Image (cartoon, rainbow, N blue to C red; front, side, top):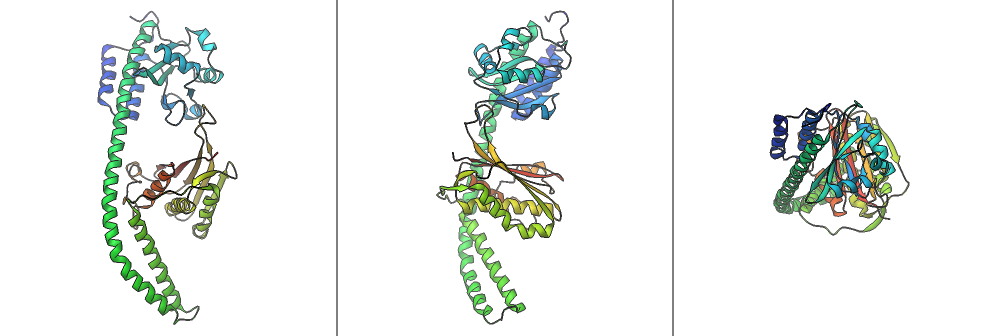
Length: 412
């Protein structure tokens, strides 16, 4: 039983409720929220931070928290090679920093600063198949809060169950993602076959129309209204050709180009292409580049297509007025600055934003929220970036705007 002065609020019902959530919840984020709330009730703590192994770096980063200001968690993380992670991995038991003052003093300076600033008193390892996959940090704004021996044992037992449930949830999420990608690939292959057949039937009449209009335009002098109309027709025919080419490229693998490029130059070229429309809409552009040159491998035309598509999306979302923020720099692992260095480009607008349910589908082919949209733009952007080991993500909220983040390997 907990000793005198224990702040444990656990009972058999509370433990069973938490155990049931571990077997029923398969979404990793929802699982962590449920675990956090369960631990808060069981142990009477108001400061909880759960960290998981960072898939893009050798360490552990925050995934869910209770009681912390998000700004306080900015840059928080523990290296997998640090003393904190090493002790938890080797001992696979809860670490009470109050009881092990000597060990707390021997932590790496960065780790020691973090646990002190966040008022962490207890660290519980999340171990699955003898591998540390994360950690739970508990603390309290009340300096008298503490866990006794029995409470630490209960926390250790729950942490081991949480680790297994979390591993299962991660595998479920990966399987769901693979099935989704398979579904998209099959859908794309079907769409590509249909598009190729339709494009074949469109090309011939387009060629006749284009040739005829080019012949007729010569009959009108410069400045004549009919000549202007004819030239606009040619422009529209050209746009239809580009659309059919984009359709026929769906489902067809391309050999990626491997040219050294300053991605900032490509981004600036795309900004020049939208300059007229930007001025017409009275949109302010704010650029913030951490460096003057960020070199990547890729195709200039393809990257320009990506940026142009994203910038036009932002302008369409803002209408008249607004702010377009462009940021670029190097994103490095906080644990090993020389490892996994990638270019990070952010395009943020103050437009209408997207609903949560729409945000989950924006990269699906043929899905669009625009009355005149084709639903191919973001899908093609994602396909292009994937060919160069790049990633694209969207954060958006209705009436607050959208931020697009692009990561590409930095050529060192």
